[in-house]
Image (cartoon, rainbow, N blue to C red; front, side, top):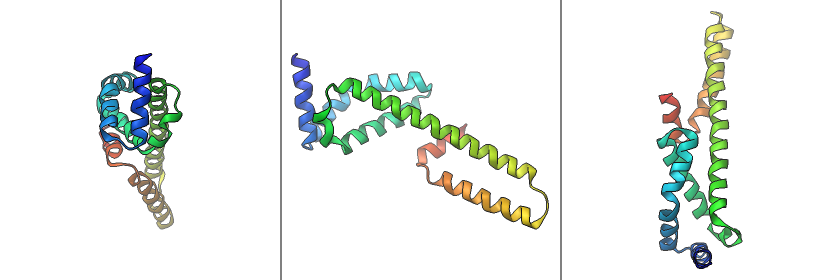
Amino acid sequence: MKDVSEEIELLLRIADGDRLAFNLLYKKYLQNLRKFVASISGNTDLADELVQDIFVKIWLNRKNLPLIGSFKPYLYRCARNLLIDYIRKSKTQIRIKEVSKTLEENCSASTDDNLIYSQTLSQLYSGLNLLPEKRKKLLSSK
């Protein structure tokens, strides 16, 4: 029971903005969470990025930490949800690239078609440019 009460105390301190307490929590869970995310994603760079995102979200929403019954399951659920979101976004980006390629291949030489193609392609790339830099790099390396 001592571990549970210590963790509750740590979460309360973090909720009050204690960065040292947050650092302790971060160090406690970092390596195992990285291994978990990397084992599912198969990509250690992606795991590093997603784990950082998880801890940033925890810090930004630290006021809600005292409401969490058990932190470890909460943390791993956050990781699972973030991975699912990443996979969904990746699939969408792959579809955008496929549509772009199809548009390019099927575009005739007419001026109207070229204009429509250019505008559509511009909109697709504008959407991709809204992604964080690390995600853009991951897409370009695939």
